[in-house]
Image (cartoon, rainbow, N blue to C red; front, side, top):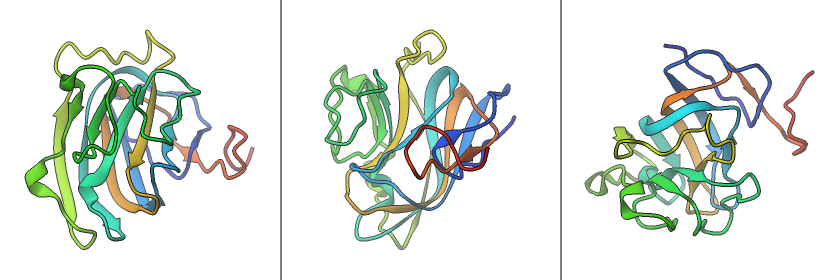
Length: 180
């Protein structure tokens, strides 16, 4: 099983064979106005899990979410009412315009404040999972939170997908990472 260390937003290496993609967050700002796109994924997203997820702020670690949207132009910056699937953000920060089966909580009984770590998973979409990223190139995966100021540390695992081995920060927003 190969894992992915996420340092930023833009994928710089070709995808490699992997069963899952693991994203490591270190004080990474993630919000509803600043979601993180996880690019260059292939395979079928079957679910997600989180480990030692820590929120620095006044919210909850369980407000973190993994969202599937159906267009590269549909950035979830204003409550993505047309998102296709969601895991996490259990208090309805996002509205799934599909079936209720595609919105899955981490666990309402385990909301943890920023001073606590939350470990949950896997949370899987009901089979057969329709989120085949290889067959439908329009699907995009975003990491989101319903608050405007959120810094997360911990790991997020996307199950059933392949991805690059490294990501680099795209600080100027041109779609390419730092360096060459």
